[in-house]
Amino acid sequence: MSDTIFGKIVSGEISSEFIYEDEHCIAIHDVNPQAAVHVLVIPKKGIPRLVDAGAEDQALLGHLMLAVGKIAEQLGVAEAFRLVVNNGADAGQTVFHLHLHIIAGQVFAEKNL
Image 1 (spheres, one colour):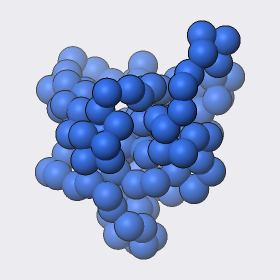
Image 2 (cartoon, rainbow, N blue to C red):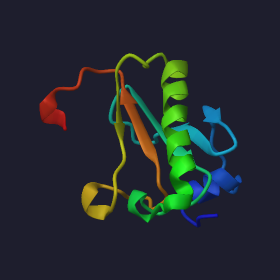
Image 3 (cartoon, rainbow, N blue to C red):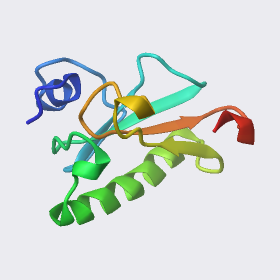
Image 4 (spheres, rainbow, N blue to C red):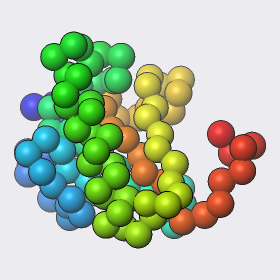
């Protein structure tokens, strides 16, 4: 398991309220939300960055996409949300345990990309 804050949350070492959990991932509210809805989807397997995923992670990566759909539906934002994966510090990644941001609850203009 990853020794990052997300690895510690996944392992139960740090307490957090899961809004979704299955055998491969969890979802929690972001502690520094950038929109009305900002949820993190975190795989239980500790992969530092997206580019560190290997062929053996293909099913997990697909699973994360399907989980995002379920979580967006659960949150009532399935019709319009943004999905963000930051890869590396220069892209804004601050925790090096792969995670996906579901961001919704506002209208996104192209300039916000």
